[in-house]
Image: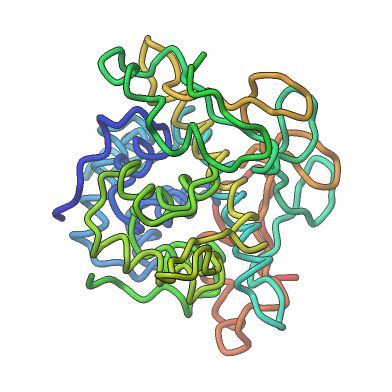
Length: 176
Length: 176
């Protein structure tokens, strides 16, 4: 698949989308998050072509989101288990589900409900500030240059529209 | 762009990815969330081709995430402002940023920091259960059939691996 290589961009959204590659990948991760581990079960769930699925699974193994481990010896058969990095992607999916449920479900309501087994409720994801625990609203979030922003781009960063944009607080562009 | 049409799937992840279309779209939304509104500023920020940008912006206007409004009369020039639906996508991006910062940043740390202007802290997104406010871990989340799950697929839903998968609690497959 020809695409713009985003992985070198100083942006975690770009790096994440570069890793995912195409939209089958979040759906494979969704199934894995719901407990699916075996090749044929992914095929059944997603009605995905076997070649495409093989590519996506291999990519996720290479990138460290899935482990490929034998579950049977004669013949050897493998299953795909989420690593810690893969488990940790679930909140992104849950945030996506929430948005889709709210804005794309139409009158009939969400197709799938998520039950939080620890509290027992049917629930949805809420994205909060890790510091004050209030919901994150983009009008109250300001991007600043971080330690991983490339030195060679730092000088020009002040010219980036995002550091001079119309957020609630004027960004200085001078960085962190 | 040829792709599998996911929009009819009874899954909010699939519908969301179908809407986004390709990975430029979340990056356009990221810039919009950081306050960018004008065509040329999107071009400068993303180094995106003008044709591709036009397509993505039109798609986001069609889908109701952006409003195209004149900001100047002679000649008429337009800017792109997030609607409520578009504003509401920010938590998905913030969850993605958090995952990318944690798993894709390498030793140098995150390229961009997010300052939460209401509490003043440099922060990151945390995805919590809307009911009990605890972080959402996929091992404690169980998918169930929701009101919007298509009637014609309900009978077969019990055969879907995700409803018989290895989540912490055995799913019944009988639905909600």
